[in-house]
Length: 136
Image (spheres, rainbow, N blue to C red):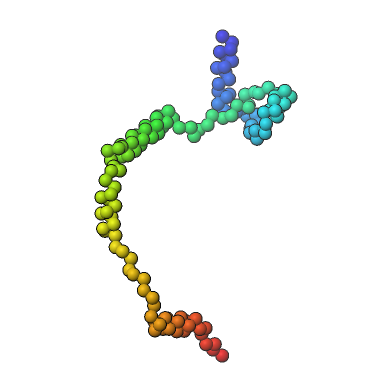
């Protein structure tokens, strides 16, 4: 009976830290299990109600979790339906490739440039490459 009364009296104190308690700062986790064991053997002060962190306020409700789970399961069923074996086939690939080859246009034939075209092109590029005249 006394344990129940103590717990009932401690519940409001656990929800909000006492005015005289300093905030608890989380420290980095020890690097190895051996270091953790050494710290445990050193001992230290027993935890008190001030070391209980405040109740988080940004935790989703059970209904929110349920909604997210339902959404994921519905998305999974939709994906299974869209990728079912009846939605595509891998048969008759020869006919498909022949149809696609028939639609494709061949590239134009490669021709060698004419000497006159090449000379005109070089002259035009040299005209572009010359720096502008300086104005004094």
